[in-house]
Image (cartoon, rainbow, N blue to C red):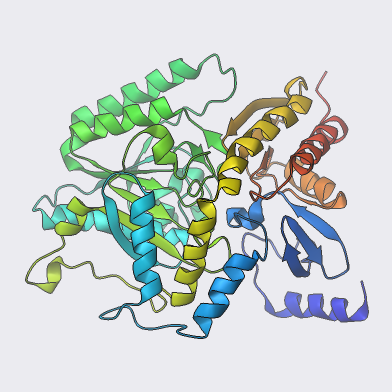
Length: 443
Protein backbone atom coordinates (compact mmCIF):
# COMPACT_ATOMS: atom_id res chain seq x y z
CA UNK A 1 0.00 0.00 0.00
CA UNK A 2 1.45 3.36 -1.00
CA UNK A 3 1.78 6.35 1.31
CA UNK A 4 -1.36 8.08 0.04
CA UNK A 5 -3.51 5.00 0.63
CA UNK A 6 -2.03 4.47 4.06
CA UNK A 7 -2.92 8.05 4.95
CA UNK A 8 -6.47 7.51 3.64
CA UNK A 9 -6.97 4.40 5.75
CA UNK A 10 -5.56 6.13 8.83
CA UNK A 11 -8.01 9.01 8.35
CA UNK A 12 -10.84 6.52 8.05
CA UNK A 13 -9.80 4.81 11.26
CA UNK A 14 -9.53 8.19 12.98
CA UNK A 15 -12.94 9.56 11.97
CA UNK A 16 -15.32 6.92 10.52
CA UNK A 17 -17.61 4.63 12.52
CA UNK A 18 -18.41 1.57 10.36
CA UNK A 19 -21.59 -0.54 10.64
CA UNK A 20 -21.67 -4.06 12.11
CA UNK A 21 -17.98 -3.77 12.98
CA UNK A 22 -15.95 -4.18 16.14
CA UNK A 23 -13.37 -1.52 15.35
CA UNK A 24 -10.89 -2.71 17.96
CA UNK A 25 -10.40 -6.12 16.33
CA UNK A 26 -11.46 -5.58 12.72
CA UNK A 27 -8.89 -5.50 9.92
CA UNK A 28 -8.28 -2.21 8.15
CA UNK A 29 -11.09 -1.13 5.80
CA UNK A 30 -10.39 -1.62 2.10
CA UNK A 31 -10.57 1.53 -0.08
CA UNK A 32 -12.60 0.93 -3.27
CA UNK A 33 -11.90 3.26 -6.20
CA UNK A 34 -14.60 2.22 -8.65
CA UNK A 35 -16.97 -0.53 -9.74
CA UNK A 36 -17.73 -1.93 -13.14
CA UNK A 37 -20.24 -4.69 -13.73
CA UNK A 38 -19.67 -7.42 -11.18
CA UNK A 39 -16.12 -6.22 -10.38
CA UNK A 40 -14.96 -3.84 -7.65
CA UNK A 41 -11.57 -2.16 -8.19
CA UNK A 42 -9.60 -1.52 -5.03
CA UNK A 43 -7.34 1.50 -4.62
CA UNK A 44 -4.26 -0.75 -4.71
CA UNK A 45 -5.22 -2.29 -8.06
CA UNK A 46 -7.02 -5.52 -7.16
CA UNK A 47 -10.16 -6.64 -9.00
CA UNK A 48 -12.75 -8.20 -6.69
CA UNK A 49 -15.78 -10.20 -7.84
CA UNK A 50 -18.83 -8.96 -5.93
CA UNK A 51 -20.84 -12.10 -5.12
CA UNK A 52 -23.20 -10.39 -2.65
CA UNK A 53 -24.31 -7.34 -4.66
CA UNK A 54 -22.64 -5.08 -2.07
CA UNK A 55 -25.07 -5.81 0.78
CA UNK A 56 -27.75 -7.10 -1.59
CA UNK A 57 -28.48 -3.76 -3.27
CA UNK A 58 -26.76 -3.92 -6.64
CA UNK A 59 -28.99 -5.59 -9.24
CA UNK A 60 -27.39 -4.96 -12.63
CA UNK A 61 -23.73 -4.46 -11.86
CA UNK A 62 -21.83 -1.43 -10.59
CA UNK A 63 -22.00 1.91 -12.40
CA UNK A 64 -24.64 0.78 -14.88
CA UNK A 65 -24.67 3.51 -17.55
CA UNK A 66 -28.46 3.71 -17.89
CA UNK A 67 -28.97 4.40 -14.19
CA UNK A 68 -26.03 6.80 -14.07
CA UNK A 69 -27.45 8.75 -17.01
CA UNK A 70 -30.91 8.94 -15.44
CA UNK A 71 -29.50 10.42 -12.23
CA UNK A 72 -27.34 12.93 -14.12
CA UNK A 73 -30.26 14.09 -16.24
CA UNK A 74 -32.50 14.51 -13.21
CA UNK A 75 -29.77 16.34 -11.26
CA UNK A 76 -29.73 19.06 -13.90
CA UNK A 77 -33.48 19.66 -13.43
CA UNK A 78 -34.54 19.07 -9.82
CA UNK A 79 -32.49 17.54 -7.03
CA UNK A 80 -34.92 17.90 -4.09
CA UNK A 81 -38.22 19.41 -3.04
CA UNK A 82 -40.37 19.09 0.06
CA UNK A 83 -42.90 16.30 -0.59
CA UNK A 84 -45.60 17.51 1.80
CA UNK A 85 -47.95 19.51 -0.39
CA UNK A 86 -45.73 19.17 -3.48
CA UNK A 87 -45.01 16.45 -6.02
CA UNK A 88 -42.84 15.85 -9.06
CA UNK A 89 -42.76 13.76 -12.20
CA UNK A 90 -40.23 11.06 -11.11
CA UNK A 91 -42.19 10.25 -7.94
CA UNK A 92 -45.49 10.06 -9.82
CA UNK A 93 -44.11 7.92 -12.62
CA UNK A 94 -42.34 5.58 -10.21
CA UNK A 95 -45.50 5.10 -8.11
CA UNK A 96 -47.40 4.30 -11.29
CA UNK A 97 -44.74 1.80 -12.43
CA UNK A 98 -44.66 0.04 -9.04
CA UNK A 99 -48.45 -0.24 -9.02
CA UNK A 100 -48.23 -1.86 -12.47
CA UNK A 101 -45.55 -4.35 -11.38
CA UNK A 102 -47.03 -5.32 -8.02
CA UNK A 103 -49.89 -7.85 -7.88
CA UNK A 104 -53.46 -7.09 -6.91
CA UNK A 105 -54.40 -3.66 -5.64
CA UNK A 106 -51.08 -2.77 -4.03
CA UNK A 107 -51.28 0.74 -5.40
CA UNK A 108 -50.70 3.36 -2.69
CA UNK A 109 -47.00 4.22 -2.50
CA UNK A 110 -45.46 5.86 0.56
CA UNK A 111 -41.85 6.96 0.08
CA UNK A 112 -39.03 6.83 2.59
CA UNK A 113 -35.29 6.29 2.47
CA UNK A 114 -34.19 2.79 3.58
CA UNK A 115 -35.44 -0.69 4.33
CA UNK A 116 -35.69 -0.30 8.10
CA UNK A 117 -37.79 2.80 7.67
CA UNK A 118 -40.02 1.12 5.08
CA UNK A 119 -40.72 -1.55 7.70
CA UNK A 120 -41.28 1.05 10.41
CA UNK A 121 -43.82 2.75 8.14
CA UNK A 122 -45.58 -0.55 7.48
CA UNK A 123 -45.89 -1.34 11.18
CA UNK A 124 -47.24 2.13 11.95
CA UNK A 125 -49.70 1.96 9.05
CA UNK A 126 -51.08 -1.36 10.25
CA UNK A 127 -51.41 -0.15 13.85
CA UNK A 128 -53.19 3.09 12.92
CA UNK A 129 -55.38 1.32 10.36
CA UNK A 130 -57.10 -0.62 13.13
CA UNK A 131 -57.29 2.43 15.41
CA UNK A 132 -58.96 4.39 12.60
CA UNK A 133 -61.45 1.54 12.17
CA UNK A 134 -62.33 1.69 15.86
CA UNK A 135 -60.61 -1.61 16.71
CA UNK A 136 -57.90 -0.29 18.98
CA UNK A 137 -57.69 -3.65 20.79
CA UNK A 138 -55.68 -4.99 17.84
CA UNK A 139 -52.19 -4.21 19.14
CA UNK A 140 -50.34 -7.53 18.86
CA UNK A 141 -47.81 -8.11 16.08
CA UNK A 142 -46.75 -11.53 14.82
CA UNK A 143 -43.25 -12.27 13.56
CA UNK A 144 -41.24 -15.40 12.80
CA UNK A 145 -38.33 -16.80 14.76
CA UNK A 146 -35.05 -15.55 13.30
CA UNK A 147 -36.64 -12.60 11.51
CA UNK A 148 -34.55 -9.54 10.73
CA UNK A 149 -36.38 -6.39 9.60
CA UNK A 150 -33.85 -3.62 10.15
CA UNK A 151 -32.24 -1.53 12.86
CA UNK A 152 -34.77 1.15 13.82
CA UNK A 153 -36.66 0.52 17.07
CA UNK A 154 -39.88 -0.83 15.56
CA UNK A 155 -37.98 -2.96 13.05
CA UNK A 156 -35.73 -4.28 15.83
CA UNK A 157 -38.81 -5.14 17.89
CA UNK A 158 -40.13 -7.19 14.99
CA UNK A 159 -36.72 -8.85 14.67
CA UNK A 160 -36.09 -9.45 18.36
CA UNK A 161 -35.78 -13.21 17.87
CA UNK A 162 -32.78 -12.74 15.58
CA UNK A 163 -30.91 -12.05 18.83
CA UNK A 164 -28.88 -9.28 17.25
CA UNK A 165 -30.32 -6.44 19.33
CA UNK A 166 -29.91 -7.38 22.98
CA UNK A 167 -28.30 -4.03 23.79
CA UNK A 168 -31.64 -2.28 23.18
CA UNK A 169 -34.21 -4.92 24.13
CA UNK A 170 -35.67 -2.78 26.92
CA UNK A 171 -36.83 -0.30 24.24
CA UNK A 172 -38.85 -2.80 22.22
CA UNK A 173 -42.59 -3.30 22.01
CA UNK A 174 -43.77 -6.88 22.55
CA UNK A 175 -44.23 -9.22 19.59
CA UNK A 176 -45.49 -12.78 19.36
CA UNK A 177 -42.93 -15.03 17.69
CA UNK A 178 -44.00 -17.89 15.43
CA UNK A 179 -42.06 -21.04 14.65
CA UNK A 180 -40.10 -20.84 11.37
CA UNK A 181 -39.84 -24.20 9.58
CA UNK A 182 -36.71 -23.48 7.56
CA UNK A 183 -36.24 -26.10 4.88
CA UNK A 184 -33.73 -27.05 2.20
CA UNK A 185 -33.11 -29.57 -0.56
CA UNK A 186 -34.27 -33.11 0.23
CA UNK A 187 -35.37 -32.08 3.73
CA UNK A 188 -37.09 -35.22 4.98
CA UNK A 189 -38.75 -33.32 7.86
CA UNK A 190 -40.10 -30.51 5.71
CA UNK A 191 -43.81 -31.32 5.97
CA UNK A 192 -43.51 -32.30 9.63
CA UNK A 193 -41.93 -28.95 10.53
CA UNK A 194 -44.53 -27.03 8.52
CA UNK A 195 -47.43 -28.90 10.14
CA UNK A 196 -46.02 -28.17 13.60
CA UNK A 197 -45.60 -24.47 12.83
CA UNK A 198 -49.13 -24.20 11.44
CA UNK A 199 -50.56 -25.99 14.50
CA UNK A 200 -48.84 -23.49 16.78
CA UNK A 201 -50.24 -20.65 14.67
CA UNK A 202 -53.74 -22.12 14.88
CA UNK A 203 -53.43 -22.36 18.66
CA UNK A 204 -52.36 -18.73 18.87
CA UNK A 205 -55.21 -17.55 16.65
CA UNK A 206 -57.76 -19.45 18.73
CA UNK A 207 -56.69 -17.37 21.71
CA UNK A 208 -55.62 -14.01 20.32
CA UNK A 209 -56.93 -13.45 16.77
CA UNK A 210 -59.12 -10.49 17.71
CA UNK A 211 -56.23 -8.75 19.46
CA UNK A 212 -53.78 -9.19 16.59
CA UNK A 213 -52.92 -6.30 14.30
CA UNK A 214 -50.63 -7.81 11.66
CA UNK A 215 -48.00 -10.37 10.75
CA UNK A 216 -44.72 -9.14 9.30
CA UNK A 217 -42.44 -11.62 7.53
CA UNK A 218 -39.65 -11.97 5.01
CA UNK A 219 -41.40 -14.12 2.39
CA UNK A 220 -39.57 -17.28 1.24
CA UNK A 221 -36.11 -16.20 2.45
CA UNK A 222 -34.94 -14.80 5.79
CA UNK A 223 -31.81 -12.82 4.98
CA UNK A 224 -29.58 -11.77 7.88
CA UNK A 225 -30.43 -14.73 10.12
CA UNK A 226 -28.73 -17.08 7.68
CA UNK A 227 -30.50 -17.19 4.27
CA UNK A 228 -33.15 -19.47 5.78
CA UNK A 229 -35.86 -20.58 3.38
CA UNK A 230 -39.42 -21.87 3.49
CA UNK A 231 -41.64 -23.26 0.76
CA UNK A 232 -44.29 -21.10 -0.97
CA UNK A 233 -46.94 -23.58 0.17
CA UNK A 234 -46.18 -22.85 3.81
CA UNK A 235 -46.36 -19.07 3.42
CA UNK A 236 -49.64 -19.38 1.53
CA UNK A 237 -51.11 -21.53 4.30
CA UNK A 238 -50.08 -18.92 6.89
CA UNK A 239 -51.64 -16.06 4.93
CA UNK A 240 -54.89 -17.97 4.42
CA UNK A 241 -55.23 -18.53 8.17
CA UNK A 242 -54.61 -14.87 8.95
CA UNK A 243 -57.10 -13.73 6.31
CA UNK A 244 -59.80 -15.85 7.96
CA UNK A 245 -59.40 -13.63 11.03
CA UNK A 246 -58.96 -10.31 9.22
CA UNK A 247 -55.33 -9.93 10.35
CA UNK A 248 -53.16 -7.77 8.10
CA UNK A 249 -50.19 -9.26 6.27
CA UNK A 250 -46.99 -7.22 5.81
CA UNK A 251 -44.30 -8.63 3.51
CA UNK A 252 -40.80 -7.30 4.06
CA UNK A 253 -39.41 -7.71 0.53
CA UNK A 254 -36.52 -5.34 1.08
CA UNK A 255 -34.14 -8.17 0.13
CA UNK A 256 -36.40 -10.53 -1.84
CA UNK A 257 -37.90 -7.90 -4.14
CA UNK A 258 -36.96 -7.15 -7.75
CA UNK A 259 -36.17 -10.62 -9.00
CA UNK A 260 -34.11 -12.13 -6.21
CA UNK A 261 -36.41 -15.15 -5.78
CA UNK A 262 -36.84 -15.66 -9.53
CA UNK A 263 -39.94 -13.50 -9.96
CA UNK A 264 -40.41 -9.75 -9.64
CA UNK A 265 -41.56 -10.22 -6.04
CA UNK A 266 -41.68 -13.23 -3.74
CA UNK A 267 -45.40 -12.71 -3.18
CA UNK A 268 -45.97 -13.52 -6.87
CA UNK A 269 -44.12 -16.80 -6.50
CA UNK A 270 -46.25 -17.62 -3.45
CA UNK A 271 -49.49 -16.59 -5.14
CA UNK A 272 -50.75 -14.17 -2.49
CA UNK A 273 -51.16 -10.40 -2.25
CA UNK A 274 -50.06 -8.90 1.09
CA UNK A 275 -51.88 -5.91 2.52
CA UNK A 276 -48.61 -3.96 2.78
CA UNK A 277 -45.25 -4.57 1.10
CA UNK A 278 -41.91 -2.97 2.03
CA UNK A 279 -39.30 -2.47 -0.71
CA UNK A 280 -35.81 -0.97 -0.84
CA UNK A 281 -32.25 -2.20 -1.63
CA UNK A 282 -32.51 -3.03 -5.35
CA UNK A 283 -35.18 -0.38 -5.90
CA UNK A 284 -32.58 2.09 -7.20
CA UNK A 285 -30.22 -0.64 -8.48
CA UNK A 286 -28.02 0.17 -5.49
CA UNK A 287 -27.28 3.75 -6.56
CA UNK A 288 -29.16 5.87 -4.01
CA UNK A 289 -31.06 5.45 -0.72
CA UNK A 290 -34.79 5.06 -1.37
CA UNK A 291 -37.58 2.83 -0.13
CA UNK A 292 -41.31 2.47 -0.48
CA UNK A 293 -44.10 1.02 1.60
CA UNK A 294 -46.97 0.11 -0.70
CA UNK A 295 -50.45 -0.52 0.69
CA UNK A 296 -53.66 -1.86 -0.75
CA UNK A 297 -56.35 0.68 -1.58
CA UNK A 298 -58.49 -0.50 1.35
CA UNK A 299 -55.72 0.37 3.81
CA UNK A 300 -55.24 3.83 2.31
CA UNK A 301 -58.94 4.71 2.49
CA UNK A 302 -59.06 4.19 6.25
CA UNK A 303 -56.73 7.20 6.63
CA UNK A 304 -59.07 9.59 4.79
CA UNK A 305 -61.30 11.96 6.73
CA UNK A 306 -62.04 15.55 7.62
CA UNK A 307 -59.63 15.72 10.54
CA UNK A 308 -55.83 15.44 10.61
CA UNK A 309 -55.87 12.85 13.39
CA UNK A 310 -56.88 10.19 10.83
CA UNK A 311 -53.96 11.09 8.53
CA UNK A 312 -50.67 9.18 8.49
CA UNK A 313 -48.32 11.53 10.32
CA UNK A 314 -44.94 10.31 9.11
CA UNK A 315 -42.30 11.71 6.78
CA UNK A 316 -38.66 12.49 6.11
CA UNK A 317 -36.66 15.38 4.72
CA UNK A 318 -35.71 13.33 1.66
CA UNK A 319 -39.07 11.64 1.09
CA UNK A 320 -39.43 10.82 -2.65
CA UNK A 321 -36.09 12.42 -3.48
CA UNK A 322 -36.19 13.12 -7.25
CA UNK A 323 -32.71 11.70 -7.87
CA UNK A 324 -33.60 8.44 -6.11
CA UNK A 325 -36.89 8.21 -7.98
CA UNK A 326 -35.11 8.75 -11.30
CA UNK A 327 -32.64 5.98 -10.47
CA UNK A 328 -35.51 3.68 -9.49
CA UNK A 329 -37.35 4.33 -12.76
CA UNK A 330 -34.26 3.32 -14.71
CA UNK A 331 -33.90 0.27 -12.46
CA UNK A 332 -37.50 -0.79 -13.12
CA UNK A 333 -36.95 -0.49 -16.88
CA UNK A 334 -33.91 -2.74 -16.65
CA UNK A 335 -35.84 -5.22 -14.50
CA UNK A 336 -38.30 -5.78 -17.34
CA UNK A 337 -35.65 -6.23 -20.04
CA UNK A 338 -35.39 -9.65 -21.66
CA UNK A 339 -31.71 -9.96 -20.74
CA UNK A 340 -32.44 -9.51 -17.04
CA UNK A 341 -35.49 -11.77 -17.12
CA UNK A 342 -33.42 -14.56 -18.64
CA UNK A 343 -30.70 -14.08 -16.04
CA UNK A 344 -33.03 -15.21 -13.23
CA UNK A 345 -33.26 -18.78 -14.56
CA UNK A 346 -29.66 -18.76 -15.77
CA UNK A 347 -28.30 -17.87 -12.33
CA UNK A 348 -30.56 -20.41 -10.61
CA UNK A 349 -29.23 -23.18 -12.88
CA UNK A 350 -25.65 -22.03 -12.30
CA UNK A 351 -26.18 -22.26 -8.52
CA UNK A 352 -27.57 -25.76 -8.92
CA UNK A 353 -24.50 -26.86 -10.88
CA UNK A 354 -22.13 -25.08 -8.48
CA UNK A 355 -23.60 -26.63 -5.34
CA UNK A 356 -22.71 -30.04 -6.79
CA UNK A 357 -19.17 -29.30 -5.58
CA UNK A 358 -20.54 -29.23 -2.03
CA UNK A 359 -23.49 -31.61 -1.82
CA UNK A 360 -21.36 -34.70 -1.15
CA UNK A 361 -19.07 -33.03 1.40
CA UNK A 362 -19.94 -34.27 4.91
CA UNK A 363 -18.94 -30.93 6.41
CA UNK A 364 -21.73 -29.15 4.52
CA UNK A 365 -25.51 -29.37 4.89
CA UNK A 366 -28.80 -27.62 4.09
CA UNK A 367 -27.98 -26.87 0.46
CA UNK A 368 -30.67 -24.55 -0.87
CA UNK A 369 -31.60 -22.34 -3.81
CA UNK A 370 -34.37 -19.81 -4.33
CA UNK A 371 -34.16 -18.00 -7.64
CA UNK A 372 -30.87 -16.09 -7.78
CA UNK A 373 -29.95 -16.99 -4.18
CA UNK A 374 -27.85 -20.04 -3.35
CA UNK A 375 -26.58 -21.12 0.08
CA UNK A 376 -25.36 -23.93 2.32
CA UNK A 377 -24.41 -24.37 5.98
CA UNK A 378 -20.97 -25.43 7.12
CA UNK A 379 -21.27 -28.12 9.80
CA UNK A 380 -19.62 -26.63 12.90
CA UNK A 381 -19.95 -26.76 16.67
CA UNK A 382 -20.64 -23.03 16.98
CA UNK A 383 -23.18 -22.32 14.24
CA UNK A 384 -24.80 -18.92 13.82
CA UNK A 385 -23.82 -15.36 12.99
CA UNK A 386 -20.86 -15.34 15.41
CA UNK A 387 -19.42 -18.69 14.31
CA UNK A 388 -15.63 -18.67 14.52
CA UNK A 389 -15.48 -20.09 11.00
CA UNK A 390 -16.99 -16.91 9.55
CA UNK A 391 -13.88 -14.73 9.74
CA UNK A 392 -11.69 -17.51 8.39
CA UNK A 393 -14.01 -17.86 5.40
CA UNK A 394 -14.03 -14.11 4.74
CA UNK A 395 -10.24 -14.09 4.59
CA UNK A 396 -10.22 -17.21 2.40
CA UNK A 397 -12.46 -15.63 -0.21
CA UNK A 398 -10.79 -12.24 0.01
CA UNK A 399 -7.38 -13.79 -0.67
CA UNK A 400 -8.95 -15.11 -3.89
CA UNK A 401 -10.31 -11.69 -4.91
CA UNK A 402 -13.88 -12.53 -3.97
CA UNK A 403 -16.34 -10.44 -1.97
CA UNK A 404 -18.19 -13.39 -0.50
CA UNK A 405 -19.23 -12.49 3.03
CA UNK A 406 -20.55 -15.52 4.99
CA UNK A 407 -23.17 -15.09 7.69
CA UNK A 408 -21.23 -16.98 10.32
CA UNK A 409 -21.19 -20.58 9.12
CA UNK A 410 -23.63 -19.88 6.26
CA UNK A 411 -22.01 -19.41 2.86
CA UNK A 412 -24.16 -17.88 0.15
CA UNK A 413 -24.15 -16.12 -3.20
CA UNK A 414 -26.60 -13.33 -4.00
CA UNK A 415 -24.94 -11.78 -7.05
CA UNK A 416 -25.74 -8.98 -9.48
CA UNK A 417 -27.66 -10.24 -12.50
CA UNK A 418 -24.72 -9.54 -14.83
CA UNK A 419 -22.55 -12.19 -13.20
CA UNK A 420 -21.44 -14.93 -15.57
CA UNK A 421 -21.97 -18.66 -15.10
CA UNK A 422 -18.20 -19.05 -14.94
CA UNK A 423 -17.90 -16.55 -12.09
CA UNK A 424 -20.66 -18.30 -10.13
CA UNK A 425 -18.91 -21.62 -10.68
CA UNK A 426 -15.61 -20.13 -9.51
CA UNK A 427 -17.24 -18.97 -6.27
CA UNK A 428 -18.74 -22.36 -5.44
CA UNK A 429 -15.46 -24.11 -6.25
CA UNK A 430 -13.68 -21.78 -3.84
CA UNK A 431 -16.32 -22.56 -1.20
CA UNK A 432 -15.78 -26.30 -1.63
CA UNK A 433 -12.01 -25.87 -1.32
CA UNK A 434 -12.55 -23.78 1.82
CA UNK A 435 -14.62 -26.54 3.38
CA UNK A 436 -11.90 -29.10 2.69
CA UNK A 437 -9.07 -26.90 3.98
CA UNK A 438 -10.73 -24.94 6.80
CA UNK A 439 -13.53 -27.21 7.96
CA UNK A 440 -12.57 -30.88 7.53
CA UNK A 441 -15.22 -33.38 8.67
CA UNK A 442 -14.98 -34.59 12.23
CA UNK A 443 -13.89 -38.16 12.75
